[in-house]
Amino acid sequence: MSYSDLERQWTARVRRRLVRLLPPERLLPDTQPTYVSSWIYVFGVTTMAALTVVIVSGCLLALRGPQWWHGSSVGLFVNSLHLWSVEIFFFSMVVHLWGKFFMAAWRGGRALTWMTGVVTFLTSIAAAFTGYLCQSNFDSQWISTQAKDGIDATGAGAYWNVLNMGQMLMWHIVLLPIAAVLLTALHVLLVRVKGVVPPFEEKSETSEVTA
Amino acid sequence: MSRSKHRPDVDVAPWKGGYSPYDILKEGTIALLVVAILTLVLAIVFGSPDEPAITVKSWSNAAPLDFTQDAFSQLNQTSETATYGAPYNHASVGQQLGPLSLAKWVGVTIPVNTVKDFVIDPLRALPPQPGLTAALRAWSSSSSSTRATWLKAYGAASGRLHVRGGTIEPVVAGAGPVPVLMQSLLTMARSGALDQALGNENGFYDTDYTLPLLFLEDGNYLGTQATAQHLGGDQWGMMNETGNYPGQAWLWLYTFWYQIPPFNSSGNGDVLVWALMMLLSVVLLLVPFIPGLRSIPRRTRVYRLIWREHYRAVERP
Image 1 (cartoon, each protein chain N blue to C red):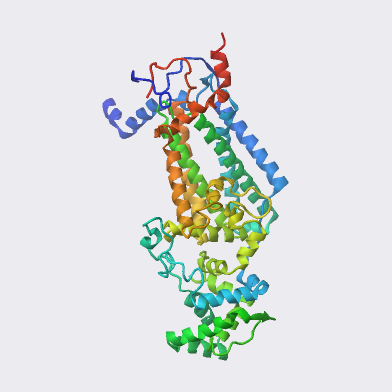
Image 2 (image 1 turned 180 degrees about the horizontal axis):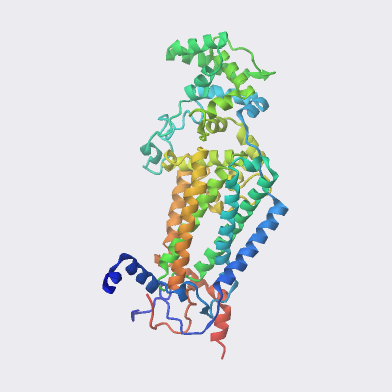
């Protein structure tokens, strides 16, 4: 096989494109623009850290099955870890979202970064909601029976039955976490590709711009 | 890169300023450690709630009359489930968004016949008992008009009913087999057998609790318990959870609409709230493309607070 044959490989082409799109120094940078200096930036990485703790504590809960935590003090503690990591996750995510809003972080061709962030936020809400539905306790009973009317009214309840604990459990531990993690990964990669949005220019009204 | 008129809410100029050292992996590791420790502390200090689920057995023992009234509303098909419409039955059009009957259009995909699923089938699963067998036979062999007469007689007397020691009193005259059916179902519920019958509809293994949850919700007991836990619809309902825990605080906006007109007074309140929330979600998604909305950050100048060090540096004389 000649060198040019190798260059035409699908694998080689994809690798070249990926490296061009996201060179290693941009994927794992060792410097950043000086304007990236505010406490608000902490909440993006905090959100990802909390997501990691959510997943790890969820996996620990999964080890012994969905009923374990009702009858075990260890299980209840792991459930507490899961609950509070979710609370930290959402707190961080909401602050991150508002921070990015007030930075107008979609500027400079970053609209897709903003949109993947919003979709991740909505997906995470669904993931947390299904968690409450599959707790198999009083909260699950009340929340599912209250929520069903809204979801049924849209027609979605015909196929997404919040009273079906098995279905909600599968969505909570398989489908929605996969979606949330993939969306988060895409969001972070887009941040690395485009970089952190610079501050508003206050002095000049017209200049060379990146659209 | 193109040379064009600068749109401050869309474009940015290339950064020509300085760079500072940044160890992304170290930052991520520190964040993970801090969040893990914070989670650990919160879990140790506050724990998490786990209020046991209400069973049909506990409900029918704690509030037997409420259970009986719920069971009768399933038999005479006046319960919320019996009159719900899609996805459970065709009893009503369901909620409408203007001219749109979304639920009705999607159709009945989780069919529930309250007479059969909540009363007759569970009773048929019981071991044969002379009185009950005769009552079930009388019910199944009667015409719909005869059943209506029995149900009307029982319904007329329902205000006088009470339960003493697990027995419904008085026995309503002229109601055919209905008093036996109601008494048998109450006895079955109080023994725990109805939990099994409703929860095992799909066989030995079952993770679908649609039937017992619908039955439970149609009574007043679940709502009363929820209100006592500050979980009622007018108490910011399902965003909360039992005990003093933050619950799903991120659902505050969704829950907020249920507290104000027209959402809290309209028969179509649920679909109106959902439509509004979907619209707001789309708006949030498309903020970068909506003139006016995307200018809010620049006009409010909150960014000056976020990037105060940067502006302090560039504005330094």
